[in-house]
Each structure stands twice: as C-alpha cells, then as structure tokens.
Image (cartoon, rainbow, N blue to C red; front, side, top):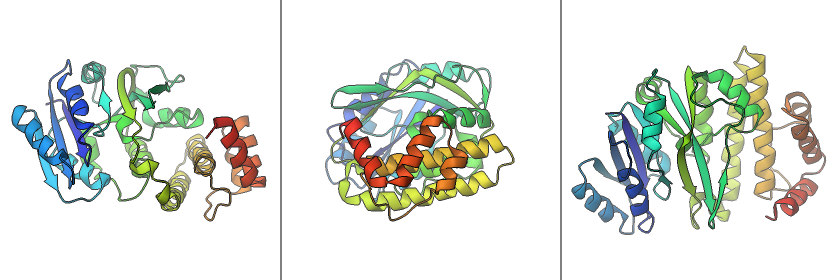
Length: 313
C-alpha cells in the first residue's frame, strides 16, 4: 500500500464529506484513509461510521477528545502505507494529488515530499510556490532547508508535506500537545531527513474556517507562549549545527517568525521574547528582514500598527 491518509475529525459535520470525497476521487487508488474521530459532539462520528461501511478503504477510529496532535499520533500508529499524508477534515486535495506524488517518488525512497498548499479564505485563494527550488528533482534536505528558510518559503505545516512512514516511525516522531504543533515538530523532522523532492502539482486546499483553533482570539496569549518556547528550541537545534549557513537560516527564520507573529496577533508589548537586537543584526536573512527587525525592536507598538495598516488587518 502506497499511502496512509490520516484525517483527524472533530465537529466538522458540514465539511467532512467534501474532504472524504476528495480522497475517494483520487485518480491513484492505492491508499487507506484513516479517520480519527476525536470525541466529536456533533454528528461527525456517526458520519465517519457511515463512510467506513460504504468504503472498505476507510478505517474509522473513535477516541476520547485529546486534540489534533493526539488524533494524528493515533492515526500514525495505525498506518500501514509507505507514505503518510496528513489531511485536516475541513480541507481537501485535488484529484491527482496521490498520482503526482507516486510518480515523483518512483526513482527513490525520499524521506519527504513537499507539496503545494493553496490557502482559501472567504473564497480567495492564496498560492505560494517555492520558486527557488527546482521541482521533481531530489534534493538534500538540509540544502532545501537553507534555501526555503532564507526565502521565507519553508512550509512547516504537516499537511504541506508527505512523509515516508518508515523514516517517521524509526525516528519516533510525535506531535506535541501544544499550539503550533506543526512548527514544533517540523524542524526536527527536516533535520533528520536525508532527501526531499518538491511536487508543485500536488495541490492541497487549506480552508480557513470560522471557529477553528487558530481563529480563537481568546487563546492568543497561550499560542504566543507556546510559539516562544518552540522558537527557543529552534535556537537550541541551530546551535548544534556545524553548518553555519544552516545555523543562520534557522535562527534568522525564528527571528522573522517571532516578529510576524507579534504583528499578526497585535502583540504590541511582548511579555515573552526570543529575539534580541544583536540577533536581528547577526541573523537577518535579507535587507528587508533587517529593516523590519530593527523597526520592531525600536518600537513594537509602531511596527504592529504599521503592519496592521499595510495588511488591512
């Protein structure tokens, strides 16, 4: 079996059918779809059972509510495919998704396949291609990291990459029970991987949904605390690297992510920080990063206000 498609399910009765239909409509049919009902309180669990009875490729697991990370971890334990695909239940994939990936990995067992994510919000689609990486060519994963971190095109989303199951399980990777769980694990996975191929024609549609975790403004401070801890761990991982280019790329990306997060969440007086002025001066990956970083360090309030006006946020 080529693919294990892992779908955590929690209170998505209105979106689930679209997600599952996008799996069933795949032109490449060598897959299993693992639906993990994470203690849904609506009819999502019953809908999973109905779909499982109708389609032998669908496996349904019911568990007590434990969050996205625990649901994904449960799905990984059950997975029998050669590669893991993470698909959130309010998202969907295009019909040739598995076919394109299957063709790309025929030449060798790459540890990671980077795919194309299309971000949908209110009917508007934002597509961000990795312009600096040649598609369908095997790359050393560390070279890929250096280039994509430098150009701000690194995709830390678990759903934005496909992973070789043996590689994942051999390294005992598990999603942590924190906000930004994808960011927490992404760097560890990419540093452990040997090779990667980029498949821009494998398209994943990430749909912003009102009421989702990342849209909950009441939990902004907890998200920020978790983010700070994650970015601090990035600095620790970077310090272990002998490759100075990779070290700078990781630390520079961590600085950039912190500043963006403060602006996006309108945190004008940060209580927790991972970035120092000397970090901005030493690890900026572009002139733009340097200017934005120094502006932020001089006056976080002024920077956040300027960012809000520019992005009409």
